[in-house]
Amino acid sequence: MIDAMVATNSADIRWVDADKDGLERPPSIAEWADATCGYITNEEKNAKEELSMKEMNGSLSSKEAIFLKLLREKDTKRAQCWLRCMKEAFVEVGLDQHLAEEFFYSRLEQVAAIMVNTRNHRLSKK
Image (tube, rainbow, N blue to C red):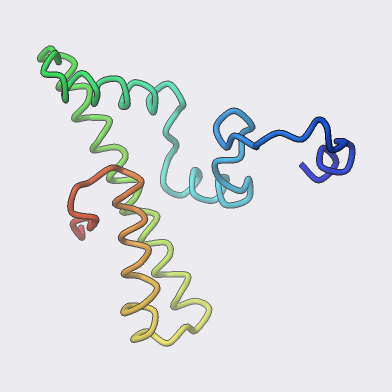
């Protein structure tokens, strides 16, 4: 990315697209999260998006509804795993537990819920 920035003249500057340019997550964090919590493929992400749209339009078949439910469950389990890892990391680095729970962890719960498109912005704790 840095090489591309330095080698690009001002006439060729363009907006970076996280999806197209593979910048959705930093590689080191992606490797850690995928190894610990599992991986969701681009095909699964696209299928979930398409099926969610069909669900909103009322044109989802029963088989598609089952597949969408499985994709959502996988996404939710992955987000819950990520939250457990974050909580463990807070303990490992010695972050004050009251501060970690009240400020950081509650914000991470909101982020994780938004990432899996839940309506209440909280994931059930399992």
